[in-house]
Image (cartoon, rainbow, N blue to C red):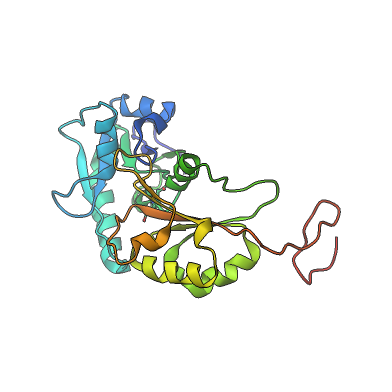
Length: 260
Ligand SMILES: C[S@@+](CC[C@H](N)C(=O)[O-])C[C@H]1O[C@@H](n2cnc3c(N)ncnc32)[C@H](O)[C@@H]1O
């Protein structure tokens, strides 16, 4: 499908996790390009974290910018209705030839609404071109902030939503040196209990609103028990005693796998 030169492009503008210093030059350029701004909100008149990052960067959002509602729900039908409504509201702007800059907190390819929006837009209008600007994901900022290396040498790293539960985390510990847990809020107490049982408490870090002026780093997780933490919270866990398969010609074959 060829892109029509008369159509605007849909651009996923990653803004990093909150610190305006982590906005890339490419994102900054698009913010100043005259593109129409669109940003996600959880409900009508709710604050947008992504839009807030542009304010922290000293920008004044254009009055005509579109707030697109994406509710916090796991109801896929409800979500699909909102992705469709959002895409339909942007199509006339794109069809008129104006680029749309969709503001994203963190990185647009990492658990972002942008993917759903872009797929819905291109399903409705296959010739619309999509650009995704890479950005600093929350856990990268969190690792840098706390001085925790996500991976050294041939360490393995798993990034996942905490909702898979502690039984999954237990299994992952066999194969991964670092676990990055996103969306930890609903399971935090359960995870703290699990860390305690596995004697891993001192190897875990909690980071809330990384990169923003309200950033909080907690190095002893039991102090968080029973607390209602912010949705923008993650956990980094370094497993200090993982058993690795031996190196064979520079590779580490899976346990039980034939040697190369
Ligand atoms: C829907 S995902 C969005 C991820 C985002 N696109 C990114 O690149 O980091 C939301 C989850 O990412 C994590 N997260 C996003 N921004 C964060 C921040 N500033 N500080 C800590 N965690 C954050 C939290 O675990 C949150 O529940």
